[in-house]
Image (spheres, chains in turn blue, yellow):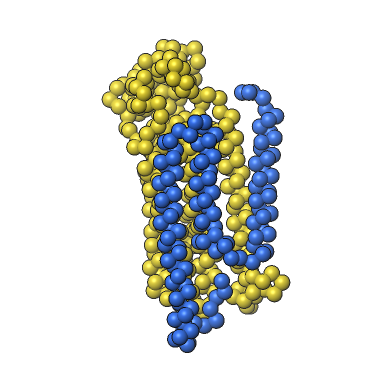
Length: 114
Length: 293
């Protein structure tokens, strides 16, 4: 989304532009409400037993991923962004997972409690 | 000197410099929090049975604080949208709402959630003395139900001097509900509404104690990671609030009137940072509040 050239000059053009932004605003409010609902869901689900602890964590992480995805796509406007930004984020994802892997390797190397 | 590409796209990247800058910064933040969360996860899965505390945090307050962060990320995008429509007054009010949310979050954290921990006492019993305190631990019951062993007695420390005075030979603790009534099936799992310490006082001899401490970072790997991550997150919220205050004070109006063009970009960059704080807030919430089990 680009910045408006200058929007206040032509009233008709401004109306059109402002209408577009107002549509975004409705979306933001809906996403905000949805996030509150998901937060309640997170709490509720942590009191439900899905069999194993792993299943519980998987369900909870799924809800958290949906929340984070909504925030990133809508609030941070990642849904429509330039390719360079995506590249930066792909790199980041790669290195974060790499870091998790390194720690996982260390974990397998340390046989005290297993 | 004019700083280039603050409001126009740089031809080779197709982006304003501020936008690339803020995303590179956020990428480094992801690595920072990622390191801490991975440390947390692996400490958690490696904890021997009974060594990871359960149900010590206040879930309703944590939920409320998460909701406040969510509202602040809504108000900050609304502030951005107001600037896009060149409505400075609406922007001013939305920024005020965002700042208020951040301040409420920090106040709750620093004046309520953390001090409650600093005032809560935990006593790890030596393995050979566990039987002596069976009436508070209920390990036979826990084993029968397949629950992890209970190695710690928690509650409110009455004789605070006992912490530092070697002449005092025992701790007097007003027990938490679990230790007051350990064989009650209601205590098998943590509750949503926190319950305060009971009237029941236990006397625990220091020679039976492995170690005892308030709920400070040194209490356990659990509280060490809790305070590190929530503390770093709190610093981020504080940083966001300070930047938002600058962008809200009268100086912002003057700068805006001189040139409104960079403002949506600035507010979006600051907003992205604020929203990242919400995001890492979600994760801390997820791990600590809801994934104590």
